[in-house]
Length: 66
Image (cartoon, rainbow, N blue to C red; front, top):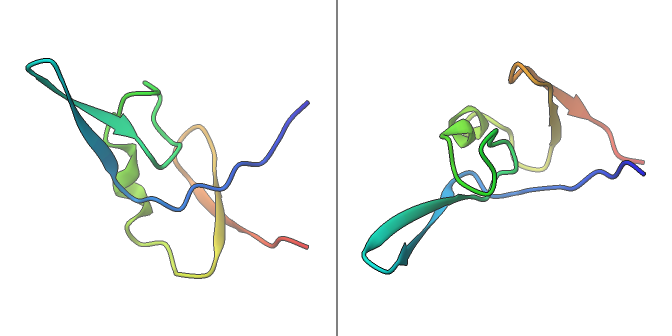
C-alpha cells in the first residue's frame, strides 16, 4: 500500500553518536536515508502553506490536498 507522508522540516538533525557527529534526514528526500545527503537544500524555496511532491530527479510540483 502506498502512502503520502508530509515532512515539514527543511534541514537535517545533527546527533553525536560516541565521538562522531551524524546528520539525519528530516526532509524525507535523502537517497541515503536515514542519513542526510543534502537533498533538503532544494526545499529552501518552498512557499509556506503549500504541499509539494518531488520526483526522483528532484523536480517539484505542488499538490492540492482535498
